Image 1: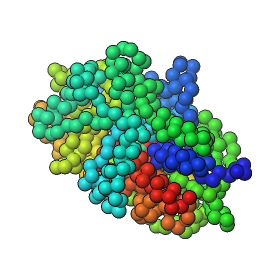
Image 2: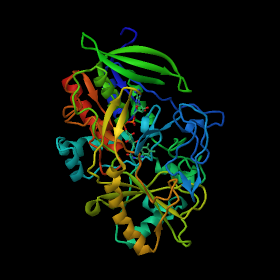
Image 3: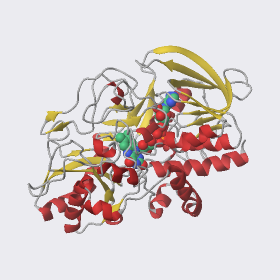
Image 4: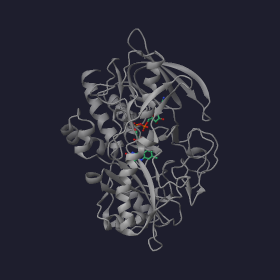
Length: 497
Ligand code: FDA
């Protein structure tokens, strides 16, 4: 095809994007992926691709002068540090009362996330996406997603004895004493590798405080699963440090993309135009929503409707810690990959992952990231002055999440004679709900798009990622995003291409 034209373009390289590119490539369709982050495959001078949480450097964050960790402090001592401004792997995007953590690079969120690979309960899935055939999802697409992602399970005997999950066993004991059930969490981190880490046979990653800034070993991130398979078809090309800024439609019905070429210091090295017939948005809830809002409100895709930018939620995320008794240490080596959750979803609408605090030293901290049922939704508007999307979400809207988590954990504290930690979030609050790891919505399935992610007003324009899900999945979301993308691209390939 002509230079500057690709029959299909996928924006982004996260879950939705990677699924879509693989299936397009398998169908023989030449496909170009445009990713604003880097390809993380080359060791730096220290021999490692990624830095760990205890020694963050320029690689840690996307164009920041200082790290912005989820736990701002221990005993009120700040743990963030100055870094060189660089196209690092973790971004934190700020909007008023809410900030959103995002992965940047080939693999998107899979590079930085905790690898928890959870299929939602069928009843809740049916509630949030009533238009999607649940028989098909649970019969075909969830199994397909689990297989392609390489989801695996911890060996229960090992869990009971290893040092690395002492922190999870302590939390389990406290939860069970209060009558709450716990469950193992499937993962795309290779638990066999983790066992060899603890045995001292292989370099440490999960057990070496590697999480949120990337894992040098053990994790089956998308570059090792879907994207490797996509490249293997011979029909998929990935271009990195390419940020799509604008989308318009030409008179022949093809799309024109305005693409910035970025330097690793964030500078814009140049701007090019790329044309395509089939355009798939996989830039994530924040990225894809912003692209369509900008296109609508600057008039390059003027027919886009009112639903663009609506139905956003943080998956009810709230983080908090409990202070343990002296006789309940949680261990100085903690696996950065969670393996256990407290499942109070059915009665109290709380699924709390037992999160690590891999500080490399004893902290007597039990940390949790709870996913709660919160019916509040935010929305985005386009801000012309900054040429970006603005999220409308207030602290008040996060309150149902805190109330739900508090109901469960007040009881756990009461029964165990423990208290919350008040030193973790930079002030004295116990519950932090001003950030999310799980942005969802903005281009909701069946609202901004049809039932398969097709943008209604524009033929051959599709949404593939977390922006399709209306604000909540009740569990960690990447398996849902992956399975939904599998379902949608199968239909689109059969009917549209
Ligand atoms: P995703 O965000 O993965 O990918 C979007 C990609 O598009 C990115 O690579 C981005 O750089 C790129 N992009 C954006 N705008 C662009 C533009 N204009 N031009 C070019 N490229 C652009 N989930 C889970 O299920 N289990 C877990 O354990 C965790 N843990 C976790 C920890 C942390 C720290 C984070 C930040 C997130 C998680 N998550 C998680 C959430 C999970 O990672 C997230 O839901 C998915 O990555 C979202 O997948 P998407 O396909 O929607 O986009």
